Image (tube, rainbow, N blue to C red; front, side, top):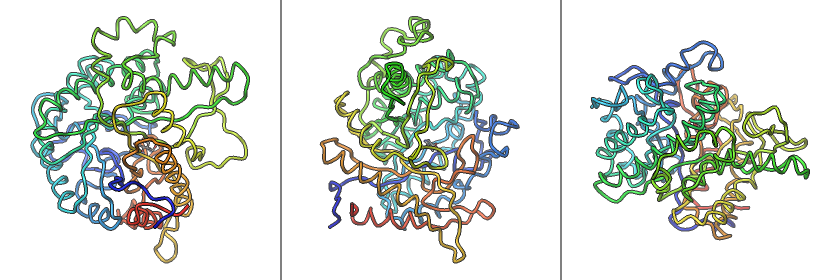
Length: 448
Ligand code: IFM
């Protein structure tokens, strides 16, 4: 018996997203998404890399499912590409696109791996972007229609559907910070996009509920990170609170309470009466399963020059860092406890992403000894166990990611996979962390 044993039926899985792994960007009738446009624009992505080929999962999905079997995964979370199914975002359905996901789901089930489908992981059809994208309320209705079409395909076999992955990132990083597609740098657009993304969750919830052939749990996954003040000063504490409202409460409050903190920000106050229509908040607050994606924390210091939050992120000395973030294992415990205590959600909770970018590579003997990832996973999974012990009903843990893949604006630099991919040959190699994770799954726990 491992010293830290998880509840029976705990779901162990790994997650990916369509644009980051599929490739085949112009095959079988797939339409253009905003990530095709963005990554094909020079200067937007590191080394001008793109997802045209990615790890070619579209053609190699059977090999990838074989790897999942080797890892002993109980579940696999992937996203469907809206542009494969509706190349223009609305209108004519592309049967070849639907067929791909049909084959993928059948193959997973054949191997006894539960498919967890996510409808949107940032690859908005370019045709909808041309009409304003997420800043246009109509996109939320188009999304509900797309959700209905996918439900028609999958709901006889799939028990869990997530509407969105990290809507905060799609809205704010894409429309306010400009680092992701569509690449705008405007807080007004960011707030508008966020509201319409959340509204589209509610509309899709109703569309899925109404059209599902069998009972299905409908969820959303959120990037959450606990926020701490850089010092005990009043200004830093207030800066941390504002950042928390912008990062965490801006998504948690609407989904779990039916309220929004956006009026706390000048731009939100200005927008809220025209943006939020009667009944919107009630629609958004419909959820069966909340997915928590956790990577790191934010430590904030008052700084007037930053728009919206007047706070700058700081990086405490002496702590451990990875290629992208501070490593802070207790944060996953604290965010799970906070969601549970502050919101008392009636829905289920799961960790739907957790992982670390480590610059690992093949050793002389063809092995990938990614010790740092193992240490990261060990410390974070132990904290998830602690949350379960303290009464948080966490039902599962999904590692990000199955294979190394396209890390958005950072291209192929950061490697998050349990499986190493040689980007020249596309050969896959299970890393030591993959073998370690397989052992955790097999034992349903780990030794502390
Ligand atoms: O790669 C991303 C993923 O698409 C969304 N969550 C965070 C991951 C690592 O940055």
